[in-house]
Image 1 (cartoon, rainbow, N blue to C red):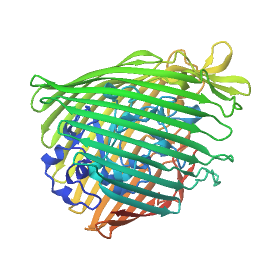
Image 2 (image 1 turned 135 degrees about the vertical axis):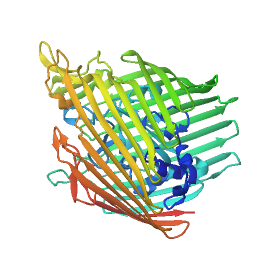
Image 3 (image 1 turned 60 degrees about the vertical axis):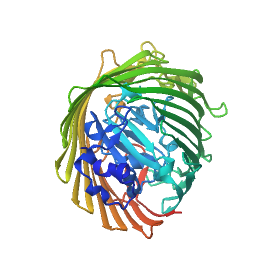
Image 4 (image 1 turned 60 degrees about the horizontal axis):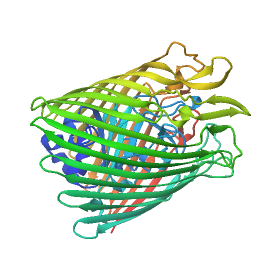
Length: 631
């Protein structure tokens, strides 16, 4: 069983908040039956999943005091997370965290919120400032390190993050949160209830203000920001049918060194229908609309992106030992990119407007070779608007040695699709084109080989270990024009491999004290392919730590007093160099009554400030006092 099983079951089975002690009484059989959905697109026990999966539970989220979705993800030991400003992060799994100096971004991690992809098709990556979920509404976060292209499609190259929110029925009543600190202040209000016996709802509104950080020279970067957001969820629950309708609206204001703030505006609407057919067969229809609009400062540009997506999935049994899931989908991205008032010609897209269509079909068969051995074979085929037909196959084998021990292995292929930034961008120095996109840019690809173990070593110790060898080809490089040198152009002339080990464990020291630890180590071995110019060195592919570690202590000092501490160690970044660092967060939560909780949190407590990424802001020490009221 993975090291998060003790915590994950607090939401799935106990359905309690930060002061629950019931989880320690769960048996190994109950812990093994914790269900996840991200590995096979169907509920399955975590213990039998043939992938490196870490589950962040609702209880983890609340007890951490995390103030953003990116900070919530710091709880996952199989992710690399680097904050670069109050609103920006670099997040990945198994390397390739980006190199901003080479205009290479963290672009190999697929992120979803209730099935809605928040991975940007414009530049490859996630705008983390646009992603926000009320912590109260997070059911769990399933974090998979390793490719997920067979089920989730392109861009799930090094991992998948699936944020799953709570049902409206689980958040009935009123909730008010007010918080203030030396760097950050926030407010949130939510109310939910029932329209009738089958329909539950909730509505919410929240906002925050984050102070600016300083540069390495100690000067303010004037990058303070705030972001009001509101939304709703409506659940209709019948015996054979479940329908969910949910949406959000937001508007963010981000400070700049110029006199004009940058703005982000957006909204989304997601509908899901699940229908239970006869026997073990079911249908699911997911559709969503997402609009994202960004306006930078007065001296930069803007874009508007509209995404329309529809996906149909069918799960059924064939015979006594085949569980099959298959589906089809189509995604349309319409965008327009412009400079600011037609005055900035240093960064252009040609063309600046496109409609991209991505169609796909997938199938995976979960074959029970015996009571304890399962083989999964699958493939997804996408019709990419730039590179055409792209297959992503995988094979996974798991062996449940006993109720307490399991081993697994996997071989899979995944792709990062080309984007307008790869194919259409035009950057100029004055009036001279300096860098242009490549209309023939190829998908970046990986073939991954993985093995893993998860189990309960002793009555109070669980462990998950996985090893991986990722073989990459057609990685993006910068190449000169063969005749005139300028303009430079994107190419695909890098290859190589990344291998490493990930491990995490949970130790139930007493019935009131739990420890969770994580460690990973990886080595990147990249090289240029024949014909590459090596205008920039191999560090253009990414700037990643060789190793990192974490330790989390969760104490229930009394039935009404909880104390949590998180330590993290991140190794040095090689090029450009950033020193290694150790930091600590802590939270003391006091339940004054069944309806009122007060919590004091401290973040980055070991240093007044530290650096996590080259040429980025200094991350400050901060304190935050929050009051949570239920009514």
